[in-house]
Length: 495
Image (tube, rainbow, N blue to C red; front, side, top):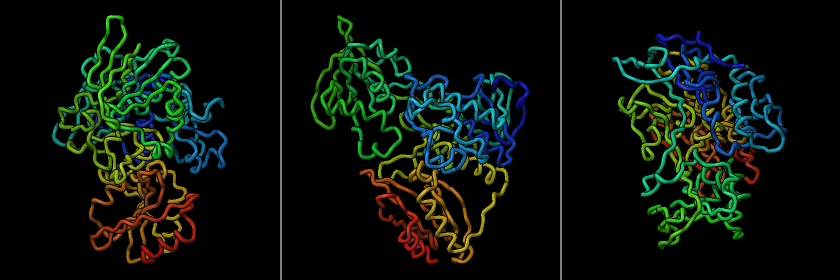
């Protein structure tokens, strides 16, 4: 059983210090070790799991893992069907969350997810200094100094995998009288009540889904509508469907597009909420027995603002470069769901999947390689590919590569085009970095989603300093490795 190891990573000097032992910290730890980066991992917790030791409040995740899939659990292809496990190079360390799941649901419980993460840490023999709380941060020249409950740690780069876990409420008059999502009661406590939920994102619909068997009426309110076409192609769709179906059938649930103007408390103990419609203009009031603020969380940034770490999204997330480094404070990186502070190009309004394990587990591998190469002089293998290999590799990745499908429009497979005869495999890179940074002639491919939820492959070509973007046609079976796609890739790459 993984527990406190007081001998791991004593205070001192390291190349990298990672803070956190949730899934982001574990995954970063794993790949920093694989890339040979001398690092320390610190955690205030007594065991691995991070936010999954507490959340989600109603104990059931949104993301799915298919226990019996068309491919073996120990293969990389299984990642396509398992959005909760951490990834690994050793087949025996893959697919560990489904191994902890029962068969009642295709989404794990909170306890099953926590068990899967603990199993990963144990099987991969990850060293972590538990019970060590990060307390302060300062700079001494090019060195970052992290003050902790165990002493000081010095490093050239720090990775904060601290999670987006601090409850956050929007600035609505009267919201101080309303419990946050994290303070919601057992669903049975709302039996026969009218419940208004502020927010129509994941946590709001998680509450609505859990309350459906108990509450008399549920009203979800936020200014922006739910984009059901895009939602249908995401892994969180199951949590949304029942409340939305109840809304469509008039079963007592309402998903209302409105901005809440104020919240008041009546003499009889009920709440009254005044709102201004957005999709349908007009002002209206709602009376409810209970109101819950599913307004989200913010990253646990501690004192990093003193080091000029800028934030976005109402100060909830760190502002990040495509490689998840603070946009304003060099050497400070983020892993886990805080990496959503780098949203990507968002060409079609669709952001990255970095808020979920299925997305940020791949970010961690790319980040570890980036740190090893750019900051510590390591050089990863970059195989030379013949023209036929380039076409088959890129087409195969468009059809099956888990990173490209999990991080649509964010991660890309790149190759350098050295005259067409000696192409170099650059591996997986952030698309935004490829697009924005000058470099030699190269190509990158991504899987993308448009506003209507259509999935299609896209090719980015950089030649003589100019960038060209070519969207390829969708396919009814997403068979992007077929003859026509290979032919189009060959033509575009001039191979």
